Amino acid sequence: MDIHVGQRIKVRRSLLGLSQEKLAEAVGITFQQIQKYERGTNRVSAGRLFDLSKVLEVPVSFFFDQFGNAKTIANGMADNDQDGFEHDDIMTRKETTDLLRVYYSVEDENARKDIMKFIKSMADRLSS
Image 1: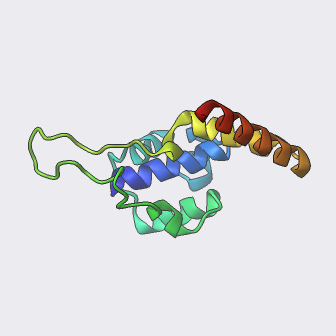
Image 2: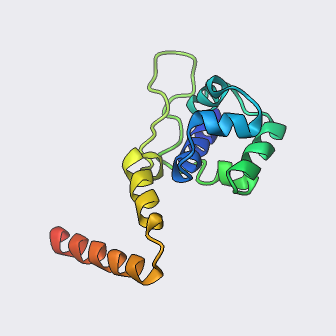
């Protein structure tokens, strides 16, 4: 759970174009603490999660969205050498956040729709 919440913090921070330093400053903690949250090394308290939700402009439930999906569930929960968590969620990839940030930087809604049509047509053509 801590790793999942940390990933969600990182995804949202990246989508907003915030550095760890800027987020930490807005919440009143060190950027090292943000790093620990994002890695899942440190657990985020309820109060801190509330503060993060305000700064990141999302409901607290955002941090728990998609928890329990097959790709985010632990492979092994025992305290031994089993494989750990699998994190193949496309929303946690840097490429995804970069694409979304660039897409939403286009202010003209019609231009964004044209971009979406273009991407869909290319995907259809390449997958055929």
